[in-house]
Length: 317
Picture 1 (cartoon, one colour):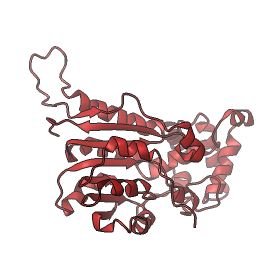
Picture 2: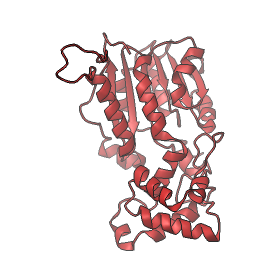
Picture 3: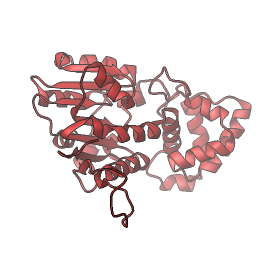
Picture 4: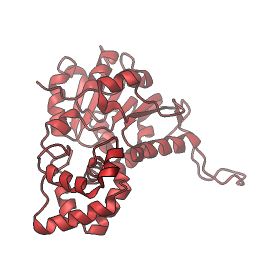
C-alpha cells in the first residue's frame, strides 16, 4: 500500500507546539495524519486532538491512521477557517496549540485523480474539497487571456505568464483543455528550452500552483484564519505554520508581526486610540527550514518554512 503522506519537520513541529499530556491541540490540515499521530502520542493519556481537513479522503485516512487514539480525537471535514465553529460544537473555547500545514499531501498528488500533478493524465480539477464549486478546468477554459496572464503572474510568479496564457487561449479554440497532461504540454511548449534548462523545477510547477491556489481560495482563507487564530489560544498557547511558497509565507510573517506589534497609532499620538495590544510573540526570528538529511529522505520538504508564535500571558485577542 502506498504511503499516504510523509509529514514534514515533525520534530520541529512538536518542539514549537510544546505538546504536553492533557493538552488540547488542533491539527487544522490533517493530510496523512502524520503530525496528528505524533501530537496524540505527546498529549496522551487524557489530551484531546481536533483534526480538520477539507479533503474527505484525509478524514477517512485519519480514522485508520489514528485508530489507537480515536477516543481522544475529534474529526471534522471542512476548511480550517471554520475552526471556531468546530470548537463551539465541542464546547471548547481555547486551545493549547494550533498546527497548520499548507502543503499538498502525497496522496493528493499521486492518487487523488484530481489533476494536482502535471506528470499525470487526470481530469483538471484541483479542488481539495470536491463539494466546492469552480475547478481548474473552469478557470483554464473560461477566463480571458489577460485574466489568465494575471493569475499566473500574481499567484504563480510565473515569468512566462503571457506566453502561456496566449497559447492556452489558442489551444482551447480547437478543443477544451480538460486534463492535467494537456495543460502541462501547453505550458511546456510556451517556455523557451533555454529557460527550461535553467529551472530547477518542472516548467509547469508555477502554473499548476497558481491554479490550485485560486481554485481553493488558499491565500484568502489563510489570511482570514491568521486574523482569528490568536483569539482561540490559551495564554501561553502556540501556533505553528508550515508554508511551501513565498505568498503563503509572506501572509503568515506579516500577520504574526501585526499581532506582535500591538499598537498601530502614529508615533506622535500622545495616547493610544487604536486599542490594539501585543498578543503574540514569535518563537523563531527567521523561518526555520528542514535539514538537508530530511530533504534527501523527503524531497517534498525542500521548500518548507516553519514559523511559530506564542500567545502572551497578558494578551487578550
